[in-house]
Image (cartoon, rainbow, N blue to C red; front, side):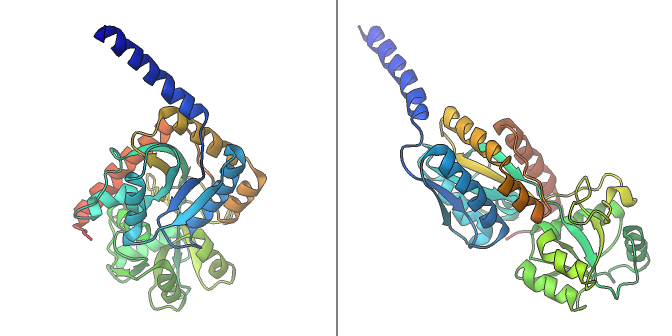
Length: 320
């Protein structure tokens, strides 16, 4: 009798999960953005959230939970009920870099989440003030080699992507540049434009106006291909530094234990949203491409990104 009851219970459990996934969602979905409103993460989440609202038939509510470099919001998502009604738009710093950068991160990027879909991998652009006597990226490398630590570079802070992109370049190219960290990309960019710091690995949106008005000079993009925003600016790899590529990272995660069927549904709908004309246009205006792919694709990118950038953080001895 006990064996028979156990078999019945197991069968009922097997039926319950697919039915619950089939009826998903049953209430509004909280889409956590671990940063303040208005930034790149927030913009991407709202674009995707609007499409998910239509596709899933439930309101997707963007919940901005900034703090501690984005780790507070990500931790909140990790501890949420794993029923598909809480997801998070995680990013480079709080997933790929966080485990190596923070002495005690309250979540594990691999064990505490179900990867849903890779959203985007934006590259940066290496810019210099016009007073710097270089015209090309090759000139930049040659000048840095002849003038060690003369090319100070600005960043949005220790452990940020533009800090680590520059450190990776130093390692690959064999050059020396001094780091000048700021409290955010805005103040860093202002000082580069003002000529107080000669160079920076900048995000496309904030660099665009300064490049078109010749207040900055673009030397190379860090991605594997040229940007449609700056087609005249070559990649670092094609400019004499083969093998150098660097990109930021955004991905949607759900709490560990979220049913696979629900993860698959979310993955399908987010991938479909990337084909919408308004999302294509919004991403193109930012100089980036939506990524997409399977849950296995984003899981692989997390593992590889943590290994690559985590090693660099440890080699530099960075901690927060």
